[in-house]
Length: 243
Picture 1 (tube, rainbow, N blue to C red):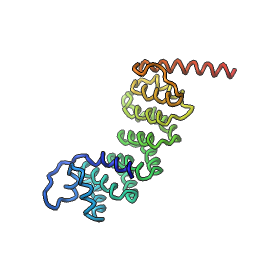
Picture 2 (tube, rainbow, N blue to C red):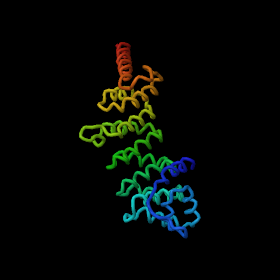
Picture 3 (spheres, rainbow, N blue to C red):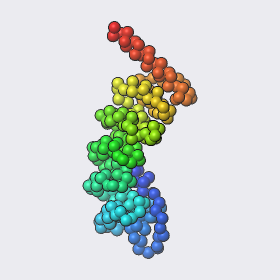
Picture 4 (cartoon, helix red, strand yellow):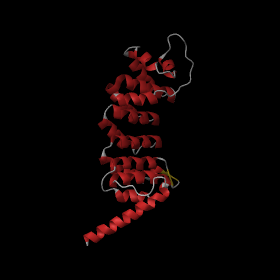
């Protein structure tokens, strides 16, 4: 569970405001602490604490911070046994629970994580969609490439015809997957109006071809022309050989 531990060390430190009494602190007060010992404190409280954390997680009258902390603590305590609650969070009306669920699932069950991330590509919340993209990139299943290419040009990932940050995440995930035969798609990205996509697109082409074109210190906005020239020449050679 090394990966799961690293997830929680990052996510479990979100601060929630509140005063901490010295004696017999409540679960909420323990969650509010910023030290690294609060999980061990919760664990010592016995099995009933899991039920209380679950209750806090799905209590809509509580603050986002408390609910997030409760969810992370609950999953860390339950590990794989917490999957039913994680699945419930996936269907929550609250974006931050859906986001948290997709984040923790790879350490619990990669197959469930993959299905959740695929579904998350169509989530109404941009943050959740971005987490879904990053999760698919980390899981490394090449069969999701087509869905990522579709998401790259989805109208949901633009606002007033302006490219949103998720599109850079998508191209980065596709570069990590480096699906053979996708050279033309990466070349197309090099003509996109969003220049932040050029660097990950070039990274994808480098992984696919094993080539390095242009000096690395040349900005991607200029280095892309080396790749466009290479692709044009490659296509011309292929056509000549086929005729």
